[in-house]
Image 1: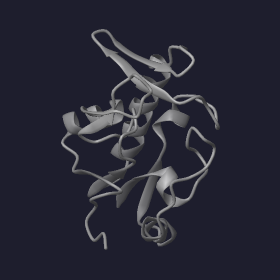
Image 2 (image 1 turned 135 degrees about the horizontal axis):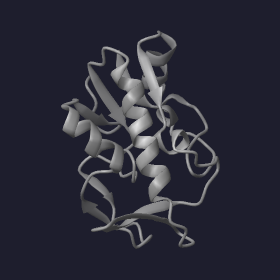
Image 3 (image 1 turned 45 degrees about the horizontal axis):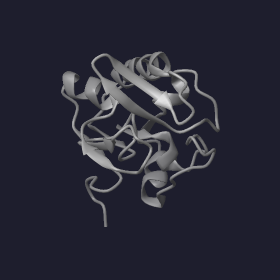
Length: 144
């Protein structure tokens, strides 16, 4: 089984209320080979929702573009998504790049200016601690 960000399989769960559909990943889901997760929705955030970024590491703080603190929702959603994946024999995980939850090695810098820094999203941090193999939609195995 492969863990995949739900938005990559055509589900409208992004902050904009749409998806980041990738047909090849959608086919993995349709073949019953995927476990889909959206940490942000699992944390109780709405669809659509204001964009959010990690604005501070010490202490950890995730805020929306309008200044609302949503750290609790991001942390709880990441843990719930991890708990879901732990219930399956997951070979690897494919997540949405640059997301404050799912970004691998690169996320937005917290200034809402589309600048990217070298860091991981909150969910990815948990996955790394657990030893999961992680990819994004930009570099997953078999990508054409």
